[in-house]
Image (cartoon, rainbow, N blue to C red; front, side, top):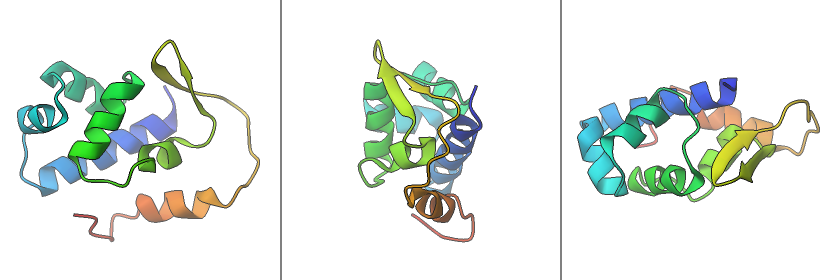
Amino acid sequence: MSGNYDRLAKMIVKAREARGWSQSDLASLAYVTEVVIARVEAGNPPNAVALKAVEQALGWLPGIFDLILGEDASLENGVVLAAEGDDEDDGSAELRELTVDSSIDWA
């Protein structure tokens, strides 16, 4: 499992808890099951549709999960996968670091 998925999972948990939502609340808002939310928060790569639904339910900018996961995230059979070894700097690393900065209140 990629460290980026772990980071994303922690951000989702933090955002959900900051809003006072349970996993059930987030699942209802994202139109997914609680099992999907539990998998997302455990850092397990869900299918891309569910991931986008969680992103939208949290009110995050479309594509922010892609930035967190990195440009090497790709889609294979509807599952988001992270590719290994592409270290090309496109300038998005700084944005990813700002996104995971715990001192910024994104709510």
